[in-house]
Figure 1 (cartoon, rainbow, N blue to C red):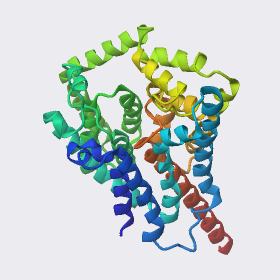
Figure 2: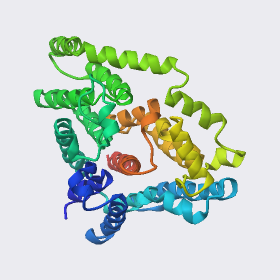
Figure 3: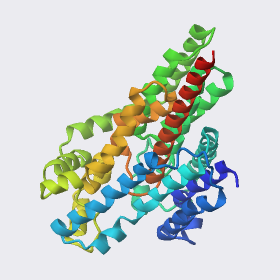
Length: 399
């Protein structure tokens, strides 16, 4: 089996096959989780051990170890402060166990091109599925309330996979900056158009600064002419879609000014009211088992009030699993942004996570697999840089 095929199938499992009705009628989320865990372990079977593998070591396996440590320690908070049994917590947080994929990827050791090819395939399919759902929402599991609440300016519905599309977009933007070509420009333009049509403001907040940076930094002998042409296209597009932009701006302004807006309520609640003890502030409260414990009952009650931890992304993760996983995530992000040797596209996605943390989480897939890829790319580029530095040192000594 090719490594890019193995990763592509991992990504499909992480998306629950976009919750397509034809798939959900056969397998539910728990079955897909079992398949995900089995597929992760099969990485150790499909690929032979490489004696020179410097990724499958304690240096990088510790990422998975620390993530699991944070998840399991939070079970004590749930038990002692919320009367939720260890078994209930173990079952409730089961979707986070997909982090087992990280040791598998470190063992398989895919190259950058394998990761990018898998991202390219899954991004293309995500866009196709999204357009099909826009035409016929019944092909995926969308409740009637979700259809009824759709605004007039909305096009399409939410489906999983947008984070993978953005990561692939950033890779193509890196190509656009380093070596301008018409083909790459068209690819970036199409991906950017999809991001706009998707109409997720948190995604746009991370993508648009990257696009502006790319327009300033890209290399071409005809840069002025190209910037003028691209700028005219962007301006024309903004004018043509002005109604949508106005609606998004008005909605954002109204939400920011509204103290009862869900995200505003959730931030104050989880920061100051949720955790009953200092231990919970450090190690989390545990993942609620809905309807099976006081912690789970509280989660249902908060839902009725419009308070969702998921609205806070990584901040919400802290309330569940504590500081340990968050420190692991941000240590990778900050090191990547601080050091020069990491590729631009990887810096872009780390900037996005840092700048807009509210849309990134690892309660379940695809968020778990997304962060597995982030950890793996960090390990891959770190070792690649150290190896290149060693080769340069050796060659300089020979000279």
